[in-house]
Length: 325
Image (tube, rainbow, N blue to C red; front, side, top):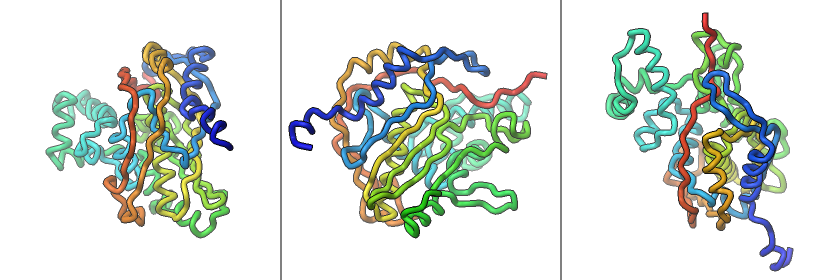
């Protein structure tokens, strides 16, 4: 490709913006059974980013980098208690354990407190945090401690890393978070998750010395969630490449049901008016050599200059719906 052709190459962020426009134009109306929330949806889409050409942290609005970084480390280290996130002032998971706590309040088994008081106790009361801050069968547990039928646990992420180092041509480097025995009405009522597993499977592949990662996400909040998910799994791809001794390849994001919430339409239209800027870069310190010793401070984001934040309400929908007797 010559300089003129390179200058005319379309910015990769337009893949995402074009998808937003397609949902606005062609999305099918759907209603969430549990909450009555309306979305407009497409099924079976895909976008991809060459990580050598920049880190896909979207620039047409600011994406919450601190949340991306700490949530990914929460997953990678096998953590399931939100105290780590709360201690780092990341509150994207606060609603789910508080929802479970509210169930105890309704049964008379816990004291009535506000969400703010609940999070303060998670931060400052270790005994309370241990009892009420843990989410069972969430990503960190499934990645690093998958519960096997014989009582042992399986470290899927460590296995994948070993597999792609020992056999770069392997086709089986998959991490799965979708365990039917704990999901929806497939689960026993007292074991069903009260929060959705959305980004449920990813596969790693090495080709020509470059590591690529493909995520399959079964349910995708296009405006609020997807930009965050793109950044999270692109960062995971770069970290795995670094730790396993490869160059970063592509991040491929495959969508099941991708949708825009009805109350996000105006925000989406505002974003579609904006022009993308140059993608930032991510650097990982040479001090990070293993899954055990890598830390958030080993990861540096450089030259991120996005347009301003576009705020929209977060909708907690799509989880377990209990049958009424």
